[in-house]
Image (cartoon, rainbow, N blue to C red; front, side):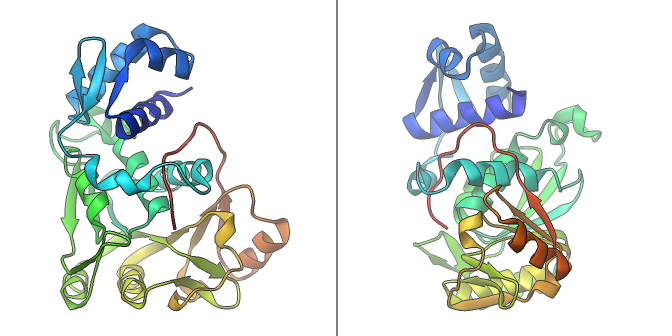
Length: 277
């Protein structure tokens, strides 16, 4: 298991239980206790958790907003998608993230990417190496404690169902910025109808994020492919990449490719703690 995968797993254990024990984590991840101690020390240095004798506990309130994002539908697939999307982002870029559980996994994968942390990122130590623009309160809450990431929150009216900010205030901020890449979470995507979500306010903000970006990535597990939802985000002409799981059929992948979308089935490894769309 790679270091990034271990870090994700350890953060998930802390997020689920509020604490993690070195010996228990070593057994669960099939690595030595010394490796877990070193991982916890490094995560504590990044203020991602608080070190204790024999383990670690959650740091401040960084996990409180994510309580609704625990074990649920298609969790391993969403975590794999999150890791794959994070690899499409380069050091120094400005990234737009919508809300939703799959995009939360993207944010978590970005937070533990080794080349974005400290001197390994090639920048001045202590300075942000990535800018994230988001309308999702839970994502902003999780990333704001990561010193390597500069967080810009859109403002707007919060939807408790998804933690997303919508409305004119959010649109006003997005109209004044540009993005290198926008990562969109959707409830449905189809070669004929394009990308859709359930709520019209979220669709409007997602569409604007796509319009402000040089590259657009849709992150959606295969259960969303070929489905229908209420509000259209964009047609496939606006989408550059579809990152999904290995459940995508060859026929569906071929149709997206014919429409000009690069399809990337994400390899699975590890487990996730997310739920929902």
